[in-house]
Image (cartoon, rainbow, N blue to C red; front, side, top):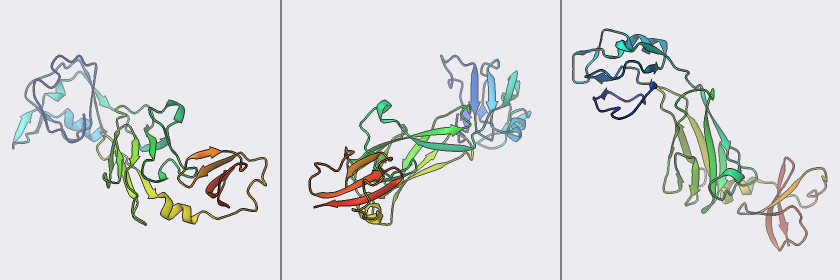
Length: 243
Protein backbone atom coordinates (compact mmCIF):
# COMPACT_ATOMS: atom_id res chain seq x y z
CA UNK A 1 0.00 0.00 0.00
CA UNK A 2 1.20 3.47 -0.93
CA UNK A 3 2.40 6.44 1.12
CA UNK A 4 -0.86 8.43 1.05
CA UNK A 5 -3.14 5.96 2.82
CA UNK A 6 -4.61 7.53 5.96
CA UNK A 7 -7.06 4.98 7.32
CA UNK A 8 -8.30 1.42 6.82
CA UNK A 9 -11.63 -0.12 7.74
CA UNK A 10 -12.43 -3.67 8.75
CA UNK A 11 -13.26 -4.67 5.16
CA UNK A 12 -9.87 -3.68 3.76
CA UNK A 13 -8.80 -7.30 3.35
CA UNK A 14 -12.18 -8.98 3.33
CA UNK A 15 -11.92 -12.50 1.80
CA UNK A 16 -8.21 -11.91 1.07
CA UNK A 17 -5.57 -14.28 2.44
CA UNK A 18 -2.32 -12.48 3.18
CA UNK A 19 1.09 -13.70 4.27
CA UNK A 20 2.90 -10.37 3.77
CA UNK A 21 1.63 -6.81 4.05
CA UNK A 22 3.74 -3.93 2.68
CA UNK A 23 2.93 -0.37 3.75
CA UNK A 24 4.97 2.71 2.79
CA UNK A 25 2.86 5.27 4.67
CA UNK A 26 5.23 6.98 7.10
CA UNK A 27 2.43 7.70 9.55
CA UNK A 28 0.56 4.51 10.50
CA UNK A 29 -2.95 4.49 8.98
CA UNK A 30 -5.72 4.57 11.54
CA UNK A 31 -7.47 1.22 11.98
CA UNK A 32 -10.45 0.54 14.22
CA UNK A 33 -10.11 -3.22 14.51
CA UNK A 34 -7.31 -5.73 14.32
CA UNK A 35 -6.51 -7.66 11.18
CA UNK A 36 -4.69 -10.98 11.13
CA UNK A 37 -1.66 -10.15 13.26
CA UNK A 38 0.17 -13.28 12.08
CA UNK A 39 0.80 -11.55 8.75
CA UNK A 40 4.37 -10.34 8.23
CA UNK A 41 4.16 -6.53 8.23
CA UNK A 42 6.82 -4.66 6.21
CA UNK A 43 7.26 -0.90 6.63
CA UNK A 44 9.57 1.65 5.00
CA UNK A 45 12.46 2.79 7.20
CA UNK A 46 13.71 2.37 10.75
CA UNK A 47 12.06 5.57 11.99
CA UNK A 48 8.75 4.45 10.51
CA UNK A 49 9.14 1.09 12.25
CA UNK A 50 9.22 2.96 15.58
CA UNK A 51 5.98 4.75 14.69
CA UNK A 52 4.20 1.46 13.99
CA UNK A 53 5.20 0.05 17.37
CA UNK A 54 4.11 3.01 19.51
CA UNK A 55 1.17 2.69 21.88
CA UNK A 56 -0.90 5.39 20.15
CA UNK A 57 -1.07 6.89 16.66
CA UNK A 58 -2.55 10.12 15.29
CA UNK A 59 -6.25 10.10 14.46
CA UNK A 60 -6.93 11.80 11.06
CA UNK A 61 -9.99 13.47 12.59
CA UNK A 62 -7.98 14.78 15.54
CA UNK A 63 -6.56 13.39 18.77
CA UNK A 64 -4.99 9.93 19.03
CA UNK A 65 -6.00 6.31 18.60
CA UNK A 66 -4.88 3.13 20.24
CA UNK A 67 -2.28 1.62 17.89
CA UNK A 68 -3.45 -1.75 16.55
CA UNK A 69 -0.32 -2.15 14.41
CA UNK A 70 1.93 -2.86 17.38
CA UNK A 71 0.24 -6.22 17.90
CA UNK A 72 1.72 -7.68 14.72
CA UNK A 73 4.03 -10.49 15.80
CA UNK A 74 6.37 -10.09 12.83
CA UNK A 75 7.17 -6.54 11.74
CA UNK A 76 10.31 -5.40 9.91
CA UNK A 77 11.66 -2.87 7.42
CA UNK A 78 11.50 -3.55 3.68
CA UNK A 79 14.13 -3.13 0.96
CA UNK A 80 13.73 0.35 -0.53
CA UNK A 81 14.67 1.02 -4.19
CA UNK A 82 17.25 3.70 -4.92
CA UNK A 83 16.60 4.21 -8.63
CA UNK A 84 14.31 3.42 -11.55
CA UNK A 85 16.05 1.93 -14.56
CA UNK A 86 14.45 2.69 -17.93
CA UNK A 87 15.16 0.24 -20.74
CA UNK A 88 13.88 -0.60 -24.20
CA UNK A 89 11.50 -3.52 -24.61
CA UNK A 90 12.68 -6.11 -27.12
CA UNK A 91 10.48 -6.04 -30.20
CA UNK A 92 10.13 -9.83 -30.23
CA UNK A 93 8.39 -9.86 -26.85
CA UNK A 94 6.48 -6.59 -27.12
CA UNK A 95 2.67 -6.75 -27.30
CA UNK A 96 2.57 -4.37 -30.29
CA UNK A 97 4.68 -3.22 -33.23
CA UNK A 98 7.51 -0.94 -32.13
CA UNK A 99 8.97 1.84 -34.22
CA UNK A 100 12.22 3.00 -32.64
CA UNK A 101 14.32 5.56 -34.45
CA UNK A 102 17.97 4.53 -34.79
CA UNK A 103 19.30 7.06 -32.33
CA UNK A 104 16.54 7.12 -29.69
CA UNK A 105 17.87 6.02 -26.33
CA UNK A 106 16.01 4.41 -23.45
CA UNK A 107 15.13 7.75 -21.85
CA UNK A 108 15.25 10.08 -24.86
CA UNK A 109 12.95 9.45 -27.81
CA UNK A 110 12.62 11.23 -31.15
CA UNK A 111 9.32 10.50 -32.83
CA UNK A 112 6.46 11.61 -35.01
CA UNK A 113 2.67 11.04 -34.96
CA UNK A 114 1.80 7.36 -35.23
CA UNK A 115 5.04 6.13 -33.66
CA UNK A 116 4.74 3.64 -30.81
CA UNK A 117 7.47 2.86 -28.28
CA UNK A 118 7.76 0.52 -25.33
CA UNK A 119 9.86 1.37 -22.29
CA UNK A 120 10.30 -0.83 -19.22
CA UNK A 121 10.74 0.63 -15.75
CA UNK A 122 12.58 -1.56 -13.24
CA UNK A 123 13.18 -0.68 -9.61
CA UNK A 124 16.78 -1.10 -8.44
CA UNK A 125 17.64 -3.20 -6.53
CA UNK A 126 15.43 -5.65 -8.36
CA UNK A 127 14.50 -7.53 -5.19
CA UNK A 128 12.66 -4.45 -3.92
CA UNK A 129 9.04 -5.37 -3.20
CA UNK A 130 6.20 -3.46 -4.88
CA UNK A 131 7.76 -3.13 -8.32
CA UNK A 132 4.68 -1.29 -9.60
CA UNK A 133 5.41 1.93 -11.49
CA UNK A 134 3.05 4.71 -12.54
CA UNK A 135 3.57 6.71 -15.74
CA UNK A 136 2.20 10.13 -16.61
CA UNK A 137 2.63 12.55 -19.51
CA UNK A 138 3.19 16.31 -19.28
CA UNK A 139 0.95 16.65 -22.37
CA UNK A 140 -1.33 13.64 -22.95
CA UNK A 141 -2.86 15.35 -26.01
CA UNK A 142 0.49 14.97 -27.79
CA UNK A 143 2.04 11.88 -26.19
CA UNK A 144 0.02 9.22 -24.38
CA UNK A 145 1.47 6.59 -22.05
CA UNK A 146 0.03 3.83 -19.88
CA UNK A 147 1.42 2.13 -16.79
CA UNK A 148 2.87 -0.68 -18.93
CA UNK A 149 5.22 1.86 -20.56
CA UNK A 150 3.44 1.85 -23.94
CA UNK A 151 4.08 5.26 -25.48
CA UNK A 152 2.02 6.61 -28.41
CA UNK A 153 2.82 9.87 -30.16
CA UNK A 154 -0.40 11.63 -31.23
CA UNK A 155 0.96 15.03 -32.30
CA UNK A 156 4.40 16.53 -32.84
CA UNK A 157 5.87 17.99 -29.64
CA UNK A 158 6.57 21.70 -30.07
CA UNK A 159 10.04 22.79 -31.17
CA UNK A 160 12.32 23.11 -28.11
CA UNK A 161 9.41 22.07 -25.88
CA UNK A 162 9.61 18.28 -25.50
CA UNK A 163 6.96 16.21 -23.75
CA UNK A 164 8.18 14.68 -20.50
CA UNK A 165 6.99 11.31 -19.23
CA UNK A 166 7.35 10.85 -15.46
CA UNK A 167 7.63 7.54 -13.64
CA UNK A 168 6.80 7.18 -9.94
CA UNK A 169 6.48 4.36 -7.41
CA UNK A 170 4.50 3.41 -4.30
CA UNK A 171 7.38 4.39 -2.02
CA UNK A 172 7.39 7.48 0.16
CA UNK A 173 9.86 9.95 -1.39
CA UNK A 174 10.88 7.10 -3.67
CA UNK A 175 13.01 7.35 -6.80
CA UNK A 176 11.59 8.88 -9.97
CA UNK A 177 12.57 8.71 -13.63
CA UNK A 178 11.82 10.71 -16.75
CA UNK A 179 11.62 9.94 -20.47
CA UNK A 180 11.81 12.86 -22.90
CA UNK A 181 9.93 12.86 -26.21
CA UNK A 182 11.22 15.32 -28.83
CA UNK A 183 10.06 16.37 -32.26
CA UNK A 184 11.85 13.99 -34.65
CA UNK A 185 11.62 16.00 -37.85
CA UNK A 186 12.07 19.53 -36.56
CA UNK A 187 14.92 19.04 -34.13
CA UNK A 188 17.04 15.95 -34.22
CA UNK A 189 16.96 15.16 -37.95
CA UNK A 190 18.15 18.67 -38.70
CA UNK A 191 21.10 18.15 -36.38
CA UNK A 192 22.24 14.92 -38.04
CA UNK A 193 25.23 15.62 -40.31
CA UNK A 194 24.94 14.92 -44.02
CA UNK A 195 27.58 12.58 -45.43
CA UNK A 196 27.26 11.08 -48.91
CA UNK A 197 30.96 10.33 -49.44
CA UNK A 198 31.83 8.15 -46.47
CA UNK A 199 28.67 6.08 -46.14
CA UNK A 200 29.56 2.46 -46.77
CA UNK A 201 33.30 2.93 -46.38
CA UNK A 202 33.39 1.08 -43.06
CA UNK A 203 32.66 -2.45 -44.21
CA UNK A 204 33.19 -3.86 -40.72
CA UNK A 205 30.20 -2.01 -39.29
CA UNK A 206 26.64 -3.22 -39.64
CA UNK A 207 24.58 -0.84 -41.80
CA UNK A 208 20.93 -0.02 -41.14
CA UNK A 209 18.94 2.35 -43.33
CA UNK A 210 15.75 4.16 -42.25
CA UNK A 211 13.31 6.55 -43.86
CA UNK A 212 13.14 10.07 -42.52
CA UNK A 213 10.22 8.84 -40.41
CA UNK A 214 12.29 6.11 -38.78
CA UNK A 215 10.99 3.07 -40.67
CA UNK A 216 13.67 0.48 -41.55
CA UNK A 217 14.16 -0.11 -45.27
CA UNK A 218 17.13 -2.49 -45.28
CA UNK A 219 20.90 -2.54 -45.00
CA UNK A 220 21.96 -1.60 -48.54
CA UNK A 221 21.84 1.62 -50.56
CA UNK A 222 21.19 -0.36 -53.73
CA UNK A 223 17.72 0.06 -55.13
CA UNK A 224 16.63 2.98 -52.91
CA UNK A 225 14.36 5.54 -54.54
CA UNK A 226 15.14 9.26 -54.44
CA UNK A 227 14.74 10.87 -51.04
CA UNK A 228 16.40 11.58 -47.70
CA UNK A 229 17.40 8.59 -45.56
CA UNK A 230 18.97 8.06 -42.15
CA UNK A 231 21.94 5.71 -42.33
CA UNK A 232 23.30 4.10 -39.18
CA UNK A 233 26.64 2.37 -39.59
CA UNK A 234 28.09 1.12 -36.32
CA UNK A 235 27.99 4.11 -33.94
CA UNK A 236 27.80 6.63 -36.79
CA UNK A 237 24.49 8.16 -37.88
CA UNK A 238 24.24 10.43 -40.94
CA UNK A 239 21.65 11.81 -43.35
CA UNK A 240 21.90 10.77 -46.96
CA UNK A 241 20.11 12.49 -49.84
CA UNK A 242 19.67 10.11 -52.76
CA UNK A 243 18.81 11.91 -56.00
